[in-house]
Length: 540
Image (cartoon, rainbow, N blue to C red; front, top):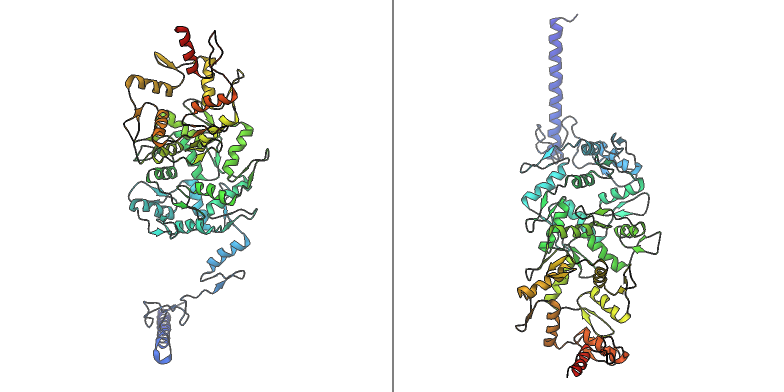
């Protein structure tokens, strides 16, 4: 049984012990810090007596902690100050991933990574923006979002001037110049510049797609892909261009679209002057330098530089056209073709000429138009000297020499060199002439041209004189009077002319062909004008 006196003496002894411990600890620290005994005050922890500049642990006098990394990896040069960090590092060598998600089987070596991953299932977004309604599952995502409010992009690439709001994004961007691909697949030779690209690739081995749509059979490797897919069901397009009203379901699509207005081309080829607005375009271009085409079709000899090109090609074998227009039922193998097609319904023309008011629904059409300002015609026919601004125009022209007629009517023996000619021919079978003004036409464009005969509109004007015309082809012919250009040449005798019709008539002088109608009392004529002159002899 304890008595009051024993309890008092025990309490006094405990206080004495604490005092002595404090006394000797303080004296030891002061002696170590004293210059007279060669002690150093560097690294001492502030806030303790005799430990003015600090880093010695108060409970363990004399033990330095500043900068020391006692825990070393026995398989590489890694060292750390904490054993828990070393344990996590060792998992990289062993491949061990003890933490597993019960929802989808995702595994990781780090418990904190599992906690972050679980938010993809729970939808929890604890990090909220104080300037808008945005919230994120990761703090790093919120930090990136905040830069959209400030617009600040302090990190710049010294190679091409690309700017970004985050140092990590700049590091990723620099790999486009260095070619570094540090993320490697352990099942094949694939390597990637970004971890996310490797994660996508790994799914090609496992086939795993844990995120499933509750409205159709679609499943995805990543939740972000599922979110994008769901907008197809809702029709929601929250991102809008302030310049032209273009709307999209994805922020990345809007960023790419904005470059059509700014003209920004941040992705540059290190082997020539080519630059592109999108990285995918640069990758396609780089394949022209290397000539590499690693993707091969198993059903024919086709090779492709891009997997997307191979996927589209395979549909030519299967006949699959998964992308369909909800307005008219048009189907295509390519999503981009569907996007272009939809503009025929919406009337949207996002591509604008910076030299006039012209705008187009497709970028290729705008590029076609720009040549009318530059006058450039880089493609030339080696047979007759004909020049054109577009390769497709040269391909069509060459058929006049080869006689090739690839477009064939399925109801008759007719074939044509141009698809437009076949389309005209097919209307002879259907009798369809939907465009009317008293005058009827199969094509809306023909009706538009015809209407100018009523309005007197002549939108095509010569920049060297007062001439104007209702049709562009007439302007092209007129301008040759100023330039003296005669692009059409006879391969037999060197005769040159500024019109294809003149060349065709001239060629008959060599072939002896007489294609025009005959007079009931005369032979055939090679030219319509000759027939007209002959008819006058009867009238006289």
